[in-house]
Length: 375
Image (cartoon, rainbow, N blue to C red):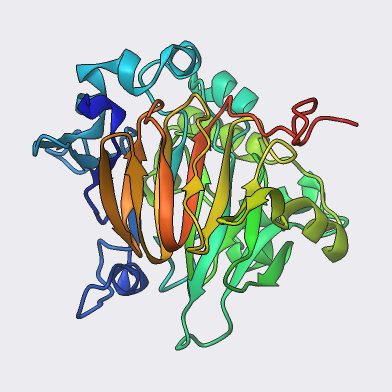
């Protein structure tokens, strides 16, 4: 069998930021430690950090272990045989990129309040083909924080652009945070973060983030080098990009939950277990991800979506079985799946998050309607 039709094991990494203890714990690494460079891990990434450290042009890109024993950056491996690895339909949409970016985020301390542009605003202001809609699946929460794990997400009811700008120009970060909903979170919950929605991952949260493949992040206040710049035109452009990126649409707490906290939607099941959509077409057309639960009674067939996938084992042990081979699996394994792995199945007692790029469809059992389409 061609190695381009087999699962590829991804090499774990750590990327920037204060934290990382919960990532290590999840991966079974001891001692699990918080560091100044460990709060993120980018999984199956072919996306570079927007401002990489000097001398590290591929910072943010993931490495992969190929079945023939070679280790290289995933984007270089894809270049070996893109038609066999990605498929033609995927390349027509995304070229040789993946069209998605997956991360672990481990917040020892609260992340800064921020927003990301919609795709239209990103194209207008940065010339980027991607905005940065994203989503969070809560893996666990810390038990030693000063308050229960939380997020800031969405404008409170009645918030206007004028109210936001007053606090922005006053450099009142606490005032800006007070205009957002604060939500206590729990393991197993899923949140969608739409383009233009203010948000911050609070201390104690350990999540899988699935998003558009962009690193455009806009802090609620100017970064120090912009704030200190003497060029008024540069400062005005920064303010325009940032303040224009928000979608000023506040709502009640109840409506905020309806918008952004997404319940799982089971769309197929059998003696092997079930698969549920966590983020799907009802939230965004730009990416999706599902949770596959395998109960060990029989092998769970993975859907051949026609697109590559990223798999993360979140619980249990088992294996992938495919035409001609097997791959042992345990918690925290990260796997890249080329688009056409034959007869791919999962066996054992497993929970797997499967991440998908734009274009993957979820059909009802009769195949007549995509889940998320209007009735």
